[in-house]
Image (cartoon, rainbow, N blue to C red; front, side, top):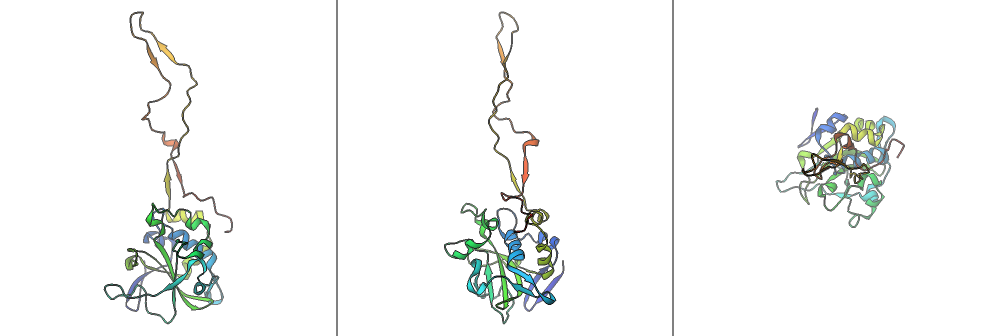
Length: 239
Protein backbone atom coordinates (compact mmCIF):
# COMPACT_ATOMS: atom_id res chain seq x y z
CA UNK A 1 0.00 0.00 0.00
CA UNK A 2 1.36 3.41 -0.94
CA UNK A 3 2.14 5.63 2.00
CA UNK A 4 2.09 9.42 1.70
CA UNK A 5 3.40 11.92 4.22
CA UNK A 6 1.21 14.93 4.85
CA UNK A 7 3.05 17.52 6.97
CA UNK A 8 3.79 15.92 10.34
CA UNK A 9 1.17 13.21 9.97
CA UNK A 10 2.06 9.84 8.54
CA UNK A 11 -1.11 8.60 6.94
CA UNK A 12 -2.00 5.90 4.45
CA UNK A 13 -4.02 6.88 1.41
CA UNK A 14 -6.53 4.22 0.37
CA UNK A 15 -6.66 4.09 -3.42
CA UNK A 16 -8.29 0.73 -4.13
CA UNK A 17 -11.00 -1.52 -2.73
CA UNK A 18 -8.33 -3.95 -1.52
CA UNK A 19 -6.67 -1.16 0.47
CA UNK A 20 -9.97 -0.28 2.12
CA UNK A 21 -10.73 -3.91 2.91
CA UNK A 22 -7.30 -4.55 4.37
CA UNK A 23 -7.44 -1.40 6.51
CA UNK A 24 -10.24 -2.92 8.57
CA UNK A 25 -12.25 0.29 8.51
CA UNK A 26 -15.92 -0.25 9.31
CA UNK A 27 -15.50 -3.91 10.17
CA UNK A 28 -16.84 -6.18 11.53
CA UNK A 29 -20.61 -5.94 11.79
CA UNK A 30 -22.36 -4.02 13.31
CA UNK A 31 -19.97 -1.13 12.61
CA UNK A 32 -21.50 1.42 10.28
CA UNK A 33 -18.38 2.85 8.60
CA UNK A 34 -18.52 1.01 5.27
CA UNK A 35 -22.20 1.82 4.81
CA UNK A 36 -21.50 5.42 5.79
CA UNK A 37 -18.70 5.65 3.22
CA UNK A 38 -20.94 4.13 0.55
CA UNK A 39 -23.64 6.71 1.32
CA UNK A 40 -21.08 9.51 1.14
CA UNK A 41 -19.69 8.35 -2.21
CA UNK A 42 -23.14 7.90 -3.75
CA UNK A 43 -25.12 10.81 -2.32
CA UNK A 44 -22.85 13.43 -0.77
CA UNK A 45 -20.13 13.91 -3.37
CA UNK A 46 -20.01 14.20 -7.15
CA UNK A 47 -17.21 14.97 -9.57
CA UNK A 48 -16.86 17.98 -11.84
CA UNK A 49 -14.21 19.09 -14.28
CA UNK A 50 -10.71 17.85 -13.46
CA UNK A 51 -12.30 15.44 -10.96
CA UNK A 52 -13.07 18.22 -8.52
CA UNK A 53 -15.04 16.81 -5.57
CA UNK A 54 -18.31 18.72 -5.50
CA UNK A 55 -20.38 18.74 -2.34
CA UNK A 56 -23.95 17.53 -2.73
CA UNK A 57 -24.72 18.41 0.90
CA UNK A 58 -23.97 21.33 3.20
CA UNK A 59 -21.69 20.28 6.07
CA UNK A 60 -21.51 23.83 7.43
CA UNK A 61 -25.30 23.81 7.84
CA UNK A 62 -25.27 20.50 9.69
CA UNK A 63 -26.77 18.37 6.90
CA UNK A 64 -27.03 14.68 7.84
CA UNK A 65 -25.44 15.35 11.23
CA UNK A 66 -22.25 17.00 9.93
CA UNK A 67 -20.63 19.19 12.58
CA UNK A 68 -17.42 21.16 12.97
CA UNK A 69 -14.29 19.15 13.79
CA UNK A 70 -11.70 21.07 15.81
CA UNK A 71 -8.68 18.87 15.02
CA UNK A 72 -7.33 19.75 18.46
CA UNK A 73 -4.15 18.42 20.03
CA UNK A 74 -4.44 15.11 21.85
CA UNK A 75 -2.82 14.28 25.18
CA UNK A 76 0.53 13.86 23.42
CA UNK A 77 0.32 17.19 21.62
CA UNK A 78 -0.46 15.63 18.24
CA UNK A 79 -3.30 16.40 15.87
CA UNK A 80 -5.31 13.74 14.07
CA UNK A 81 -5.19 15.54 10.71
CA UNK A 82 -2.81 18.00 9.02
CA UNK A 83 -3.28 21.69 9.65
CA UNK A 84 -5.19 23.21 6.77
CA UNK A 85 -6.59 26.58 5.86
CA UNK A 86 -9.92 24.88 5.24
CA UNK A 87 -12.35 23.89 8.01
CA UNK A 88 -12.95 20.26 8.91
CA UNK A 89 -16.40 18.72 9.35
CA UNK A 90 -17.22 15.26 10.65
CA UNK A 91 -20.24 13.02 10.01
CA UNK A 92 -21.33 9.58 11.17
CA UNK A 93 -22.59 10.08 14.72
CA UNK A 94 -25.94 8.28 14.68
CA UNK A 95 -27.15 9.82 17.94
CA UNK A 96 -30.14 11.77 16.67
CA UNK A 97 -30.76 13.32 20.08
CA UNK A 98 -27.42 15.10 19.77
CA UNK A 99 -27.47 15.53 15.98
CA UNK A 100 -31.12 15.47 14.84
CA UNK A 101 -30.26 15.82 11.15
CA UNK A 102 -28.46 12.47 11.28
CA UNK A 103 -31.94 11.01 10.99
CA UNK A 104 -31.83 12.03 7.31
CA UNK A 105 -29.13 9.46 6.60
CA UNK A 106 -30.44 6.55 4.58
CA UNK A 107 -31.77 3.79 6.77
CA UNK A 108 -29.19 1.21 5.71
CA UNK A 109 -26.52 3.33 7.44
CA UNK A 110 -28.16 3.33 10.86
CA UNK A 111 -30.40 0.27 10.92
CA UNK A 112 -27.94 -1.87 12.90
CA UNK A 113 -27.22 0.77 15.56
CA UNK A 114 -27.95 -0.57 19.03
CA UNK A 115 -27.14 0.49 22.58
CA UNK A 116 -26.12 -3.12 23.12
CA UNK A 117 -23.54 -2.81 20.33
CA UNK A 118 -21.30 0.21 21.11
CA UNK A 119 -19.20 -0.43 18.00
CA UNK A 120 -22.27 0.24 15.85
CA UNK A 121 -21.63 3.99 16.22
CA UNK A 122 -17.85 4.25 16.25
CA UNK A 123 -16.91 5.20 12.65
CA UNK A 124 -16.72 8.67 11.13
CA UNK A 125 -15.96 10.51 7.88
CA UNK A 126 -14.10 13.82 8.12
CA UNK A 127 -13.94 16.25 5.21
CA UNK A 128 -12.06 19.48 4.66
CA UNK A 129 -14.27 21.99 2.87
CA UNK A 130 -12.59 24.17 0.24
CA UNK A 131 -15.69 26.30 -0.09
CA UNK A 132 -19.39 25.69 0.25
CA UNK A 133 -19.42 23.60 -2.92
CA UNK A 134 -16.15 21.68 -2.97
CA UNK A 135 -14.43 19.12 -0.77
CA UNK A 136 -10.68 19.40 -0.42
CA UNK A 137 -9.88 16.10 1.36
CA UNK A 138 -11.86 13.10 2.63
CA UNK A 139 -10.78 10.96 5.59
CA UNK A 140 -12.20 7.99 7.47
CA UNK A 141 -11.51 7.27 11.12
CA UNK A 142 -12.88 5.57 14.22
CA UNK A 143 -13.18 6.41 17.89
CA UNK A 144 -10.39 5.29 20.18
CA UNK A 145 -12.52 6.20 23.19
CA UNK A 146 -15.55 8.43 23.75
CA UNK A 147 -13.57 11.63 23.15
CA UNK A 148 -10.65 10.77 20.86
CA UNK A 149 -10.09 9.22 17.45
CA UNK A 150 -7.52 6.57 16.68
CA UNK A 151 -4.65 7.99 14.57
CA UNK A 152 -3.61 4.45 13.64
CA UNK A 153 -7.06 3.83 12.15
CA UNK A 154 -7.32 7.11 10.24
CA UNK A 155 -6.95 7.09 6.44
CA UNK A 156 -7.24 9.45 3.54
CA UNK A 157 -9.70 8.31 0.87
CA UNK A 158 -8.59 9.01 -2.69
CA UNK A 159 -10.88 10.43 -5.35
CA UNK A 160 -10.29 7.32 -7.42
CA UNK A 161 -11.59 5.07 -4.64
CA UNK A 162 -14.69 7.22 -4.23
CA UNK A 163 -15.32 6.91 -7.98
CA UNK A 164 -14.99 3.13 -7.78
CA UNK A 165 -17.47 2.93 -4.91
CA UNK A 166 -19.95 5.17 -6.77
CA UNK A 167 -20.17 2.64 -9.60
CA UNK A 168 -21.15 -0.22 -7.29
CA UNK A 169 -24.35 -1.26 -5.59
CA UNK A 170 -24.28 -1.55 -1.81
CA UNK A 171 -24.59 -5.32 -1.74
CA UNK A 172 -21.66 -5.76 -4.14
CA UNK A 173 -19.54 -3.25 -2.23
CA UNK A 174 -20.08 -4.93 1.14
CA UNK A 175 -19.42 -8.34 -0.37
CA UNK A 176 -16.07 -7.21 -1.75
CA UNK A 177 -15.22 -5.75 1.66
CA UNK A 178 -15.92 -9.13 3.29
CA UNK A 179 -18.58 -7.51 5.47
CA UNK A 180 -20.84 -10.34 6.50
CA UNK A 181 -23.21 -11.22 9.29
CA UNK A 182 -23.56 -14.88 10.04
CA UNK A 183 -27.08 -15.67 11.18
CA UNK A 184 -28.38 -19.03 12.27
CA UNK A 185 -32.08 -18.88 11.41
CA UNK A 186 -34.71 -19.75 13.95
CA UNK A 187 -36.13 -23.03 12.70
CA UNK A 188 -39.83 -23.85 13.10
CA UNK A 189 -40.72 -26.63 15.53
CA UNK A 190 -40.70 -30.13 14.06
CA UNK A 191 -44.17 -31.63 13.90
CA UNK A 192 -44.03 -35.41 13.94
CA UNK A 193 -46.85 -36.78 11.84
CA UNK A 194 -45.28 -40.14 11.34
CA UNK A 195 -46.75 -43.07 13.28
CA UNK A 196 -44.60 -44.44 16.03
CA UNK A 197 -43.08 -47.87 15.54
CA UNK A 198 -43.13 -50.36 18.36
CA UNK A 199 -40.67 -53.24 18.37
CA UNK A 200 -41.70 -56.09 20.65
CA UNK A 201 -38.88 -58.47 21.44
CA UNK A 202 -40.97 -61.09 23.23
CA UNK A 203 -44.06 -61.32 25.31
CA UNK A 204 -41.96 -60.99 28.46
CA UNK A 205 -39.63 -58.24 27.25
CA UNK A 206 -40.00 -54.49 27.59
CA UNK A 207 -41.76 -52.66 24.79
CA UNK A 208 -39.44 -50.03 23.25
CA UNK A 209 -40.90 -47.14 21.34
CA UNK A 210 -38.62 -45.57 18.71
CA UNK A 211 -39.44 -41.93 17.88
CA UNK A 212 -38.85 -40.55 14.41
CA UNK A 213 -37.54 -37.25 15.81
CA UNK A 214 -34.03 -36.51 17.04
CA UNK A 215 -33.14 -35.56 20.61
CA UNK A 216 -33.61 -31.99 21.83
CA UNK A 217 -29.90 -31.24 21.64
CA UNK A 218 -29.59 -32.12 17.98
CA UNK A 219 -28.23 -29.37 15.75
CA UNK A 220 -29.60 -28.23 12.39
CA UNK A 221 -27.84 -29.65 9.38
CA UNK A 222 -25.24 -27.59 7.59
CA UNK A 223 -27.71 -26.95 4.79
CA UNK A 224 -29.88 -25.00 7.21
CA UNK A 225 -27.14 -22.53 8.10
CA UNK A 226 -27.20 -19.45 5.95
CA UNK A 227 -24.79 -16.63 5.37
CA UNK A 228 -26.48 -13.30 4.90
CA UNK A 229 -25.14 -9.81 4.31
CA UNK A 230 -26.71 -7.93 7.22
CA UNK A 231 -30.44 -7.31 7.40
CA UNK A 232 -30.70 -4.98 4.43
CA UNK A 233 -32.44 -5.85 1.18
CA UNK A 234 -30.68 -6.19 -2.14
CA UNK A 235 -29.72 -2.66 -3.00
CA UNK A 236 -28.48 -2.97 -6.55
CA UNK A 237 -31.02 -0.44 -7.72
CA UNK A 238 -30.14 3.21 -7.62
CA UNK A 239 -30.33 4.47 -4.00
